[in-house]
Image (tube, rainbow, N blue to C red; front, side, top):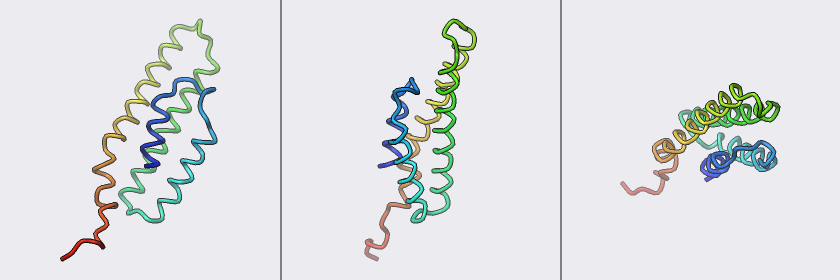
Length: 111
């Protein structure tokens, strides 16, 4: 649920000033705590998610210092932000497959 919440939260943001960084940090802490209970493949997936989030936040930070009069740079960073958001959506689409086995609760299966 934390992964889903993080991606959904960032996917709706376009302005660094409107992001609750305390919320992002809290979600990161939850993900870090979960790593102890998850298999290597899921931990790697969470690292990929963290990297994608940081890249998206970095491009938003870059846009904060740009002049909106610099059309070329503004457009370039908008395109980059769009690519970073697409990466977050791709990760989101992989959630069921990535967590399926880790959350299968096989210890409760009969057999």
